Amino acid sequence: MQTAHEMFIHELTDMLDAEQNLVEALGKQAEESSRPELQKAFQSHQAQTEKQVERLQECFELLGESPEDAECKGIRGLIAEHDTFVGEEDPAGDLLDIFNTVAAAKVESYEIQAYQSLIRMADLMKHTKVSRLLNQSLKEEQATLKKVEGFSKKLKPENLGMEEEAEDESDSRKAPRGNGSKPRRGRAA
Ligand SMILES: [Fe+2]
Image (cartoon, rainbow, N blue to C red; front, side, top):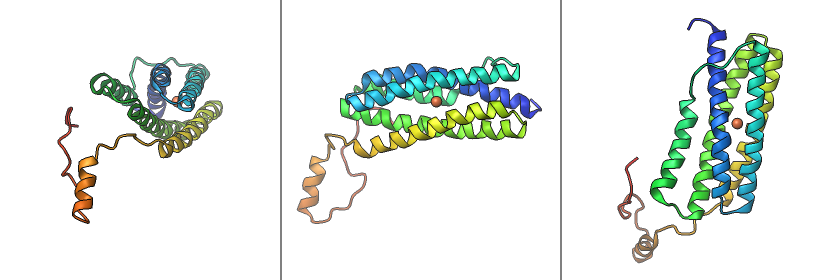
């Protein structure tokens, strides 16, 4: 690869694959949500993501190009993390809500950086209409990130699993905090 144009097409393809995979993942996350407001948020972002897929397809049309045969490993990786967490850990509903909210924030942060980079390239290459389309999606991702961060602040786990530690702390006035908690089950990171 030698030209910015080639790289732009490569990165656009990456984003298209990401958004396409997210449409399905967001549907799953909506179904898993134990809180109606979270479920609604995932559903509305799923509809938004379908639009973002269409915008990317429109970008390819405007450029007279087709998507390459490539995968966005970053977003696919985040989706795989979710599937492993749900499949292997059998998380309580409140914990799954928290996991999904944080996962959404990670996805949005990734997408924001990717769209910003695409927009910079589009502007340099004077692809005005493409840049405008990408900007619409960027604005949506930024608004979604804000919303998701709002949820993150509100959600609290029901069981902190710290009963023993709490007793210890009241016993010995100020017990040092740290890694003295029970060994955790599950895989190491
Ligand atoms: Fe998106």
